[in-house]
Structures are given as C-alpha cells and as structure tokens.
Length: 306
Image (cartoon, rainbow, N blue to C red):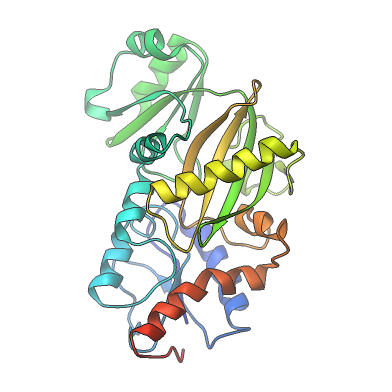
C-alpha cells in the first residue's frame, strides 16, 4: 500500500497529518509505505505492479484530478474518485450544477473570473448583502470572506487573486457534514465553530470548534441529510468515499455547500466522526475506504505487496 501525503497546495501541512494517521492505520492490514509528495509528479519509487495508492493529498493538484490523471496514465490503482469526478467536485460551481440537476438544493450564487468580476452593487441586487465570497476551487476554507454590506463586498472583491471565484448567499443556520462510503451515507455530524464561522482557523485550531456526532437532529432531518449526501455523491460520479457538507437553515432547509473527495483524515476529522456514528473506528474506516481499490487491483491480475 502506498500513502501519498504532503503535496504542493496550500493544504500541505494538513495533508501530512492525514497521511501519517492513515499510514499507521493501513499498516495494521497491509505492508504500507508513506510517500511525501513534493512536486506535481508521481513520487519516485511508486510502482503500479506493487502498490495500491491511498492519497491524502488535499487541495490543488492532489484533489482536483491532477494526481489522478497521472496515476491513470501510469496504470496505478488508487482509492477514491477518478480524475473526472475529482475535477468536477473540486469545482464548487460544477458540483452545484450536477447536484441541483438531481434535485439537491444548492445555495444561490454567482461564479466569475477575477478579471471579469461583477460590480458589488450588481451582486447585492441579485443575492442580497449577506454573502460568502470564496475561491471556486480551493479547500479548507482558504480565501473565504464573509460580508454583510455592499462596502464590505466591494473591499473583498478588490482583494481577490486571479482565478475563478464564487459568491453565494450566506445561509445562517447549522453546519452539517455527512460521510459517504461506497455510496452509503454514514452519520450526520454537526459543527459549531466558537467564532461563528467555520473558516481555516476554526477547522485547524484546537478547541476552536465543537463537534456533535451524531448531530442532535430529529429523525426526519437526519434522514434528509443522509439522502441528500448520497444523491450529491452519485450526481458527481464519486466512487469509494467522500464527505458532503451542508447548511441547515432556520427553516430546516438543507443547502449543499460542497463535496470533499479527499477530506481530512486524522482520527478527529469529520469523515471519521461520521463513520463512528455507524460503528466504524478509524482503522476499520480506512481499511473500508481502500478495499474497492484493492479489489480493482486484484481484478487486474496482481496483488499488492507494499
């Protein structure tokens, strides 16, 4: 088994933590080697005749189909979504379009290139003043801005960097996360950031957020969240596993935020929390996540040795 960690994105340090935790878990079932990926290329020593890949590369290149395309070209079997689904889910706007076509409620918003950004007044006229501005293809809330007035929006737009951006209505309510394993929705987790905003600091600062697994919801809302997670996963062509995030409004309406195909994978991360609601501990979860890839490897006529 080969665990890929690190990478070249802004989420490198998060990925290293995920990779170390998963390598330790996988080593209980398979001979396992941890690769620290430092360039946008396959790491030296990776051999598709011997290795099945379990990637924990978060963000750009690792999660957006870049590494998956290299693995496909090298005929290396790997756990998780293929290149096309990875590219689709990394693009928040494409994810919303695919999910909405399957009947999943999405947050109203606009996608635009930084070089052709609309005027703040035009955005507010269409979506209102309470808004969220974020890169269209980043993870871990990198670049996230919350605005409540046209002036704040104008200032935030002036700060954006080149690339595609998404501005959405801000849904005030409860943030939920649902793991999906081989198409089956797991438990619903509620996130309560103490700052009121689940941004990068709230995600990765110890004690900055509270987590409830399972989320204290009535049975109907829990069932609806699980069903919507499975629908969004299928709509985007995901395989093996993913994590699907929602906002639950004060009117008890679920809004899809995003699908994360290579989510954080420490024992205290959201997907493992979701799995524990269903009786899967961390080691059992990681083994289940990689099992379909091992099966694909065996069907190809070889057997993983390291």
